[in-house]
Length: 293
Ligand code: GUN
Image (cartoon, rainbow, N blue to C red; front, side, top):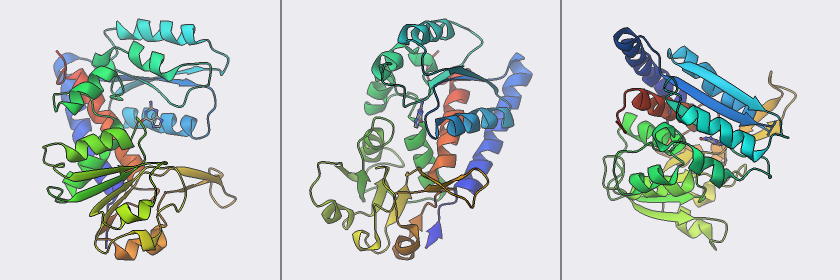
């Protein structure tokens, strides 16, 4: 069993990003600039956004965090997005999800200028990704493909089973794994909450990608010998033993599943760190006008 080491790979890729950012600064006198909008005090969101901002600074990007209280109106957020959409100093904009119930995430997503949509959630980017055209690819699926690439994991002809059909991870991931590309060409099964007997599918998976948000959902009896297991779970539990007061658990019973795997991602230290790399690479591509002129 080999660990897919998100710490090692993300640090290496961030060094490459930092070199490119320095080159851009030298050539143009400006840094790539990411803006994040955060509304309210949802569980992990504050921590995740703070980490995104910190990593921007680490690789030599500018970062701006715009925080709104839970009481902000949808119109106010939409107005702010409109202003950012036309601000030439800003390359990327993300609005951290989930949002409070009175704000419609679809309205917000569609308002973002798709040329700055470095989360890749706008229908134009999703549609272009599905057609295998240049687009911003959602950060978590993007980070996972970078991880597969880094470890030279062969995907062509393999059976990839994705658990979870969210807009952020499962749905775009299933599209990418089926696509005709160097990290695709899988036969893909997408399982979700209405799939009966999920074990029947997971037992046949050469590559198992789990994004369901339930601690220990995947147990050793559900995994084929030699499988590649990618754990997207970020389940936070209060803990007295950590500095932050929380401990993070994946969706996979790591201790018992790991011995059966050829490769597996740990939590923490796996996919979460790669998500940030995906976001940084999208922001860099936006600053370089690589996707859209
Ligand atoms: N919430 C969980 N993951 C993400 C992400 O990748 N982007 C945004 N904007 N919100 C999220």
